[in-house]
Amino acid sequence: MENLDSTINPVVPMLSIVLSVYNEADGIADCHREISSVMSSLNCTYEMIFVNDGSSDGTERILREIAAQDSLVRVINFSRNFGHEAAMLAGIDYSRGEAVICMDADLQHPPAKIPAMLESWRAGAEVVNMVRADRLDANAIQKANSRIFYRLINSISNVRLAENASDYFLISRRVADILKSDFRERTRFLRGIIQIVGFNKTTLEYVASERAAGKSKYSFFKLLRLSFTAISSFSKVPLQLGIIAGIIFGLISIVLIIYSLIMWVHDTPVSGYTTLVVFMSAFASIQMFVIGIIGQYIGYIFDEIKGRPIYIVKEVWG
Ligand code: UDP
Ligand code: MG
Image 1 (tube, rainbow, N blue to C red):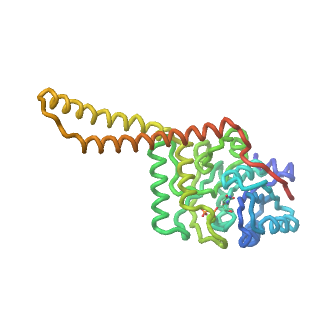
Image 2 (cartoon, protein in one colour; image 1 turned 90 degrees about the horizontal axis):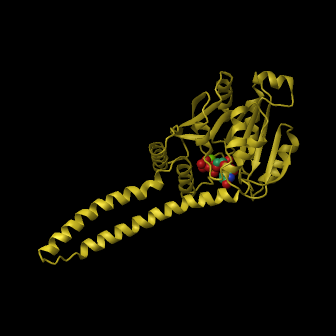
């Protein structure tokens, strides 16, 4: 049915490839070349959408040249940097293909896997999750962090996210339209969202290679923030930490109160200095921590209420 539509209307490509690009001047031409060469071996109409997320190096100029030479390329130029998630969403919004593939523009997501992804889509999958079987760009600590993150989010939310899921995935037009109309949250974790929309899903494995050029835009703290964003958009358990801490401290208080009263009745003054210090410090820090978490969630509500745009497009070429 989907393939039939694209033969009736040749303007609609079968596949849209969305690439988010931020300061990738050194590698972007290679990326375009490699994807084009994979696609030329396939019997498939396509468009390549580069979303330039406010790059400050020569990326914009190079993309302009690529778009001028290759009629299958479109460039969405943001007015400033809005972040990777916003760039992917913009690409999905502007895509027209019957299927949409999102991938990074640093060749860490091997274009050689595109044929297999299309194969799964033709076989009926509406979401093709690409899961990293291994990554050559990360050390043992980074891999462990990623594992801890997925364990944590799966244990405290009522969704099951595939471990090592990535921002390399294929979605059908139907899923792309759902993201476009119904998932406009300001706090997003797209690779999680595509796993909860339902429909037929499959998972394929790939090995993430080293970056072809340039360096990663995600520092440890940016990743930490992304992790909290992901957890808060899929779970309310952090908000319940206050209740759990309250119950534990309540139980300890009961013991302390009974002990103190007994000592008072027997007229034996206790030197409770240590108890007081331990109790007060632990209580104060847990309280601050819980207030901080509530603050984060309020921040997300605040962003949502303001309803500012997720991204602003400066111009579109191609
Ligand atoms: N990216 C983006 N906006 C940003 C940061 C990154 O569009 O603010 C793009 C970047 O150009 C790359 C992809 O998102 O194509 C993934 O970023 P990166 O390779 O730095 O992340 P890593 O692979 O190290 O997790
Ligand atoms: Mg990368």
